[in-house]
Length: 131
Image 1 (spheres, rainbow, N blue to C red):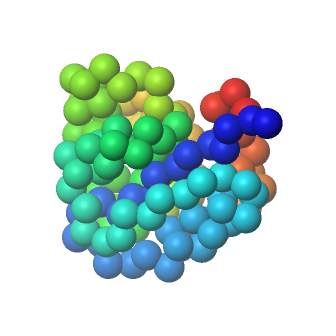
Image 2 (image 1 turned 90 degrees about the vertical axis):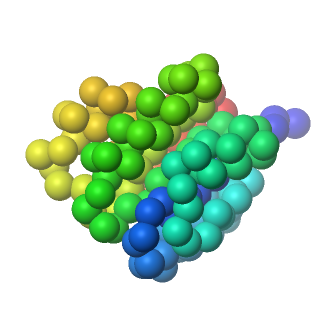
């Protein structure tokens, strides 16, 4: 029997809109993944610490505030500093297409703007975690 993919869904910063994150978390869970939802107003340090403590395969950030660039820069820098190169990092929310190359250059592997189908997110995670 294969181990379930473990996903941490996080809401960094002051963004108070978490309906989308909760819906995505439920869709991932319904697909057979184990999902840990952090709740609102998480720090980048807290997210990385929780990811390590929970031994997750994936960190999924939900960002609606427009602060995705600085948040992702900080997260990826901290992950590099802590040698956490084996975790898949994805981001969803209000992500303009023009920012996709910059996010990919930071090491964000999956970028899912609002309206992305759940099946696309699930397939991406499954394909990029070896499950």
